[in-house]
Length: 93
Image 1 (cartoon, rainbow, N blue to C red):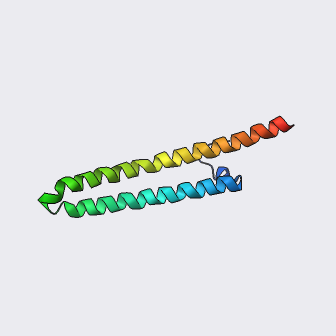
Image 2: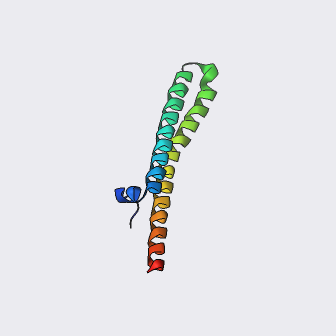
């Protein structure tokens, strides 16, 4: 079994639920990052808000960095879930 395969996400109800949860988190990170960048951009129009706007850019960047981390963590977890299933099946025979 390999990482980043659609079949891994459809192995069981548990894997479908886990994948759905991580897709939700991935989408929330997208929206959060976009929101931080939009507000940060608006704040750059005023010298008084530039520092706070810079912090929002940093937070937005961290949210964008979170996205591939979430994706990899989910894929490894799905891989391990299936791997445990295979081990249990081999043990039963």
